[in-house]
Length: 186
Ligand code: FNR
Image (cartoon, rainbow, N blue to C red; front, top):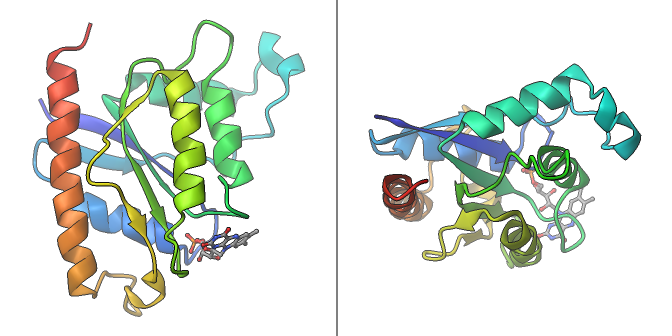
């Protein structure tokens, strides 16, 4: 079985480096996994009052995450933390109480920045949430990807060779991790 991986990109902008990185990872992924981006920009802000009659897009998002064999977060860092759009999606997926869509999923965290620190702060704030949500992220290799501003060509394709090498190593390790957890899944 090809394992179905839901990829959440933390940036909503058209020319997002993170979205391009997510596409590059999908291209490089081994045949054992398929990476599909799941949109989060259409999700209205989480409000507990809506739990009794949730918006259709919340229901569809929760179902999509529940169906996935694994999740992969590819996100920028905003003010040393996780962008609000991604936090919102995570909160929506975590509710109603006791029915979290995240429960037990194998995971992965990639942060991408044009800056030097590679989104370390966002990466670890995300990991703090994943611990609570019982998502099991790949621990090594870590992926704090800095200086990504010149990685992509006009066509949006990855043109930086050392970045490509690292992303290949990462996605291979991620595929092996998801397969390992899937083989022991309840
Ligand atoms: C940023 N940026 C940023 N970069 C970083 O490395 N650490 C940070 O804390 C922040 N903070 C931050 C806050 C806000 C509100 C914005 C809009 C941007 C810069 C950010 O890394 C840059 O805009 C990236 O290009 C965003 O990722 P995408 O959209 O290219 O995927």
